[in-house]
Image (cartoon, rainbow, N blue to C red):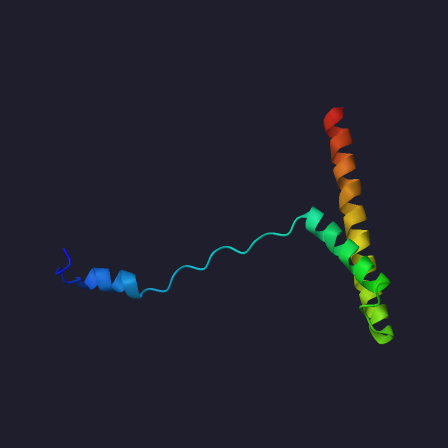
Length: 82
């Protein structure tokens, strides 16, 4: 089989670029961990004073989002129990 010549179909398959894998998803636990990382980084002085307001805005948005999702999950759980 070492002497076998690839046919045209084989060459086409070999020359096709590989399909890109699906991107990993980000879960709520990942977002909560991100909040903890930002909090820890700010405590350790990783951000300059001029950057703190931008970091704070994103941190607050993330906190509100996680709080909203948590409340929605609790509501859904309460509805399912009834």
